[in-house]
Amino acid sequence: MASVFTKIIEGDLPGRFVYRDDVCVAFLSIEPLRYGHTLVLPIKEVDRWTDLDTETWAHLNEVAQKVGNAVKDGWSSSRAAYIIAGFDVPHTHIHIFPTDKMEEYDFSKALDADATDPNAMDEAATRIRQHLGTNAEGYPEN
Image 1 (tube, rainbow, N blue to C red):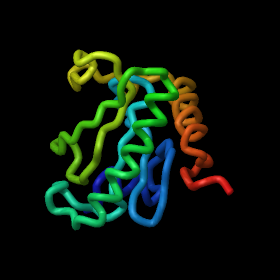
Image 2 (cartoon, rainbow, N blue to C red; image 1 turned 120 degrees about the horizontal axis):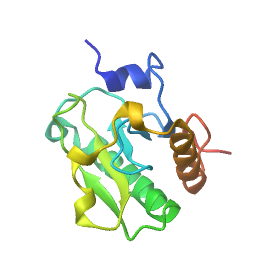
Image 3 (cartoon, rainbow, N blue to C red; image 1 turned 135 degrees about the vertical axis):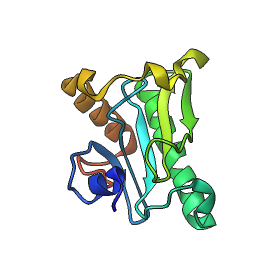
């Protein structure tokens, strides 16, 4: 059975994409720790990051770094957080979000999907895309 992330990638569920290529995608978390919280994941469904081939792992980290710079710059934060938790959805994903303090790394404080402001989520996706130079589907603008 496909993971919820695979369903988002395939368009069966909605997602706010900020990056997409042939290997991976990045879209906003529906339960953000802060607006701008983005998930970077391979298109291929692999449960544990330690099971990824080295090329895919390297590519995910390259994209995570780009997204990290976009969220850091987009929110003028001092850092971009990078977390691999791996228990909520059985599909490897890296959490990236703007942060200024260690206390913001607390998943128990994440906004519930129903509590997020849709306009703030749309604005966050737009802000990240502007820094990445990608369009509404997450592809590079040419």
